[in-house]
Amino acid sequence: MSSIPIKSPADIVKMRAAGRTAAIVLDRLAKLVAPGVTTGEIDRAAGEFMAELGCRSAFLGYRGFPAQTCISVNEEVVHGIGGARRLAYGDLVKIDTGIILDGWIGDTATSVPCGAVDPETERLCIATKRILEGAIPFAVAGRRLGDLSNYIETEAVKLGLGVVREFVGHGVGRKLHEEPQIPNYGRKGSGPKLKAGMTLAIEPMINLGVEKVRILEDGWTVVTEDGKPSAHFEHTILVTENEPKVLTCLPPIA
Ligand code: MG
Image (cartoon, rainbow, N blue to C red; front, side, top):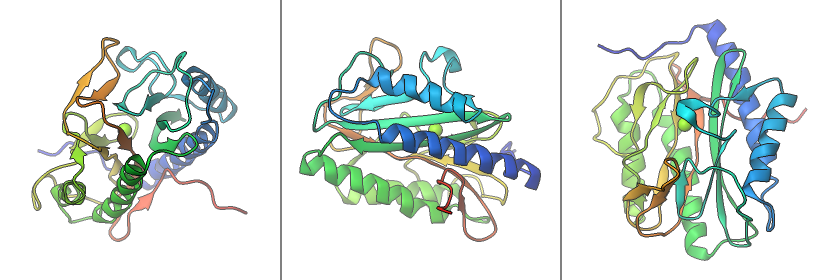
C-alpha cells in the first residue's frame, strides 16, 4: 500500500511558493559564505531572511534540532549546527534550508566553496551538482523511483565517489519527511511507481572517500568516517506526466 501523498493543483500553488521562498533564502545565505564568517552568523541571518519573507524554519525544533538551517563544513555531511566555527578559505560549506510557508514546506540545499577549494573537492562538488541535475529528469509519472536512485549511485560510483547510505531524500509537503524515502542508491525498476502530483526532495550526499559516516557527540552532525569532504545538493521537485518541475528554483529575473 502506497501512502505517498498526491498534491492537488491548489496544494501545488502553495508548494511552488514555499519552494521559491526556500530558494531565495538559500541563495542569500550562500552569498554570505566567506573567510572569517561564523556558521552561527549564517544561521542567524537565515532566521532574519525567513522572517522577512514571512516564513519560518522547518528544521528548528524538528525532533529537537537547535538551529534554523543545517550548515555542514568539509567532512561534515549533513545536519551540522551553526555556531562559533569561523569559515576558512578552502572550506566547502553545505547549507540546507527547509522553510514552512503557509503550512507547506520547501527543502533545498547547496554546497558553497569558501573562496576556492582544492581540485579534488571541486571535482566532488561539481559531480554532486551534476548528479542531482541528471537525476531530476527520472522523476516522471510512470517511472519507478529505483531508476532515479540507481542513476545517482551509478554516476557516483563511476567517478570513484562514496554514496552516503544512512541518510536519504524524501517526499515533502505539509510535513518535512513524507513517503517515499529516496535513497541515493538502488536497483532499476524497484521501488514505488511515481505519479503526477508527488513532491519529492532529491538530495544526493556524496563523499570524496568512503561512503561510511558517523554522528558526532552533538547527536546531529553527520561526518565522513575517513574525514574526507562530502558534498550535498538538494531540490524539491514536482512529478508531472512529462517534465519534472523544480519547485526550489529562484524567481526568473523580471
Ligand atoms: Mg531534505
